[in-house]
Image (cartoon, rainbow, N blue to C red; front, top):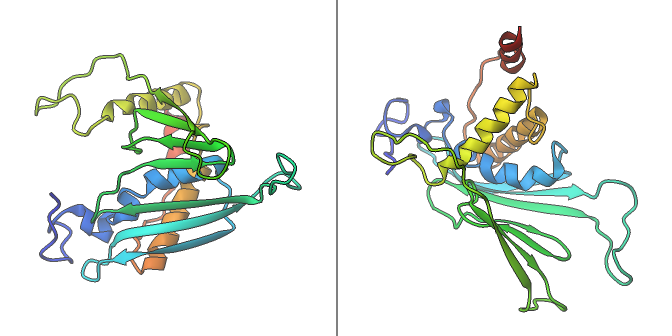
Length: 237
């Protein structure tokens, strides 16, 4: 259970999640998961519009919850209808929510004209997804469903001091992330092609927009040279 600070001005008081100077708040602690998932189809493209609302803690100044809605235009020229009589695709809307004072079901759903792709909970470290193809007519109950499980890593892992293999559920999925980073380093890449630096910066810009909208404090980061390029150059020099 997180400890609320007795003295909000003392970073050592209470849990770091309640201190803006330590990067606290829902948007920085949990927000990158839904924001990365929501912006995944659009890469680093900036949304046309961003709307946000949420709750900030007046004592600590951090954001306790925030919902963001992003709107994107359809790329690639004039829109054409998939079949006669249907509306051509005009763009997309992304809605995300993050909170540290309540726990959601944590599901990611991609909705299209033919059905849905649902990343089943916990969506920040999932083990399977479900594809639902809609039936004829609106709200048809006879949708076709198929579930795909993600294969767990096969390599054994050392146990933690508490006796479990991982501190958090499904953390073995980080093995895939570690493998991707290793492949990039051996290839001399400074960023991962599946999620680039520009995409990371786009997510951070949306976090800043959310914090500003709810009136939360933003952490002031000192200016620094590019750590990524320096680190990779040192590795392969």
